[in-house]
Length: 188
Image 1 (spheres, helix red, strand yellow):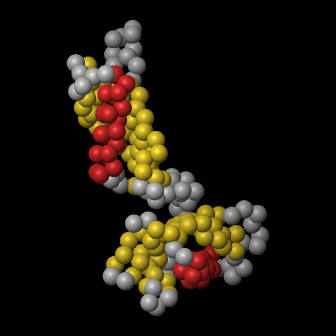
Image 2 (tube, rainbow, N blue to C red):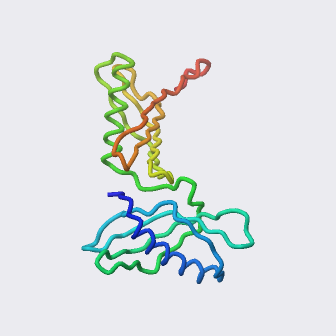
Image 3 (cartoon, one colour):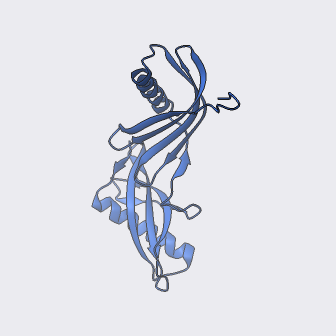
């Protein structure tokens, strides 16, 4: 559901964020800017909003990133006191739970690509490790290690990378790379 909110809601959220920041940082001369405010889910008429913002104090030369979450009720035109997160830089990717639907789509796309590249009719993947990170731009980067059965060549170690745009609901990039066998040891 990741939907951006309008300017009126951004203004209400900015006010709530400003109050929370000034109380938390004990600084009444802060400047803030909201880089993103998105509806992450709904509970009845209330919207759970998440976003990324930046603040700068008078003495500072650089903006500092933070994440926030709040609840907004459209009929009331107000946002709850936001939860602020300074722990991890808001401009860096953060680990999120794997989405089984997207992992299934990734598996299908990689198998189809291996079929096109190898000419084999029967391709299967078994995932060993899957990690998903959400980027500040709203994209998901999925990396996985897997074993690929390509025809009679079984258990071939494979690294898979996929990028998915949550807003546009489409895959941007899907790649795989077979581990090159070590010719000296015969290992895979």
